[in-house]
Length: 380
Image (cartoon, rainbow, N blue to C red):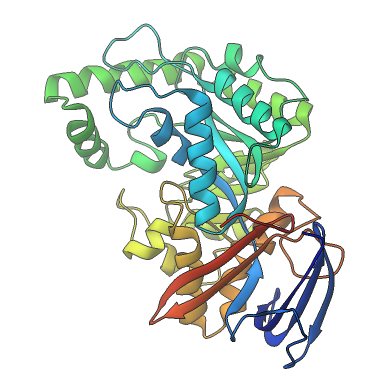
């Protein structure tokens, strides 16, 4: 494709919507104008919404493709390509693939294997080959409560397309799992742990945090500074958590669990990201604060699809309908994540930006995707 015009489109910009035309040349947007005319040869959007392609900063959806069932390990390249195609079909044109670094090898019941280096290599190779439909960057999820974090971090360098590192601390009894009963239910359902096994597991995890927590945190913060990438916190719960995050240089708070933490993030200038599944379901599956409640207080900057790629557009639409301003909702999955991650070439519809575009309509209150373009090429 060298030139294409989207006409009769309801264009969603950062703060408003209008009927107009978008012209793309090769992989760039070259013109945007308000107009109700339909030039010869243009694509008649029939009033459908056209927004920037969606930008996802935190999804572990890839893990579902790497291990589709417990103990079933899928070929890495095939898994990455399936993940890439799935995201394109949901309107996501830029993704930060969240890959865990930090594994447990000594405890059979708590064991989780290393996979980050091989997976990142596959993502980067497929990107270089031109095999991907959309843009992929690496988001390293640094698991503080682990045994091999520093060793795994050191396997990465400045050529690995790492654009974000987040601090994860899943020690039982704090942050996401301050309510221990929620973690007990999760582990009982997923890993069939009984009470005795849960007690032993919690003791082991707390021991790791006590022994290695500070060392792992310092190493992660240092790596983010060395790579000059966005550092994110995860599941901040108290104002003290947020102060700790700010002191580490955090620019984005992923999924704060309380109103207290969200307000502290706003006070300290830290962007706030919440899960779109939380919004779609009407609350947190872990019993934490609802994303809609934070949005009511204007304490929600960015949405993430987290574990359901299709939730990203749906969540944006839900906010747009709640606010009576679709552009406001869509900005949380386009311009806001682009700004948070320092992506200056995408996330808005204006001349000179990448031709990453999403056309969708509403059927009732549900978005139905009509087409997806990444770098001017139709991918969905």
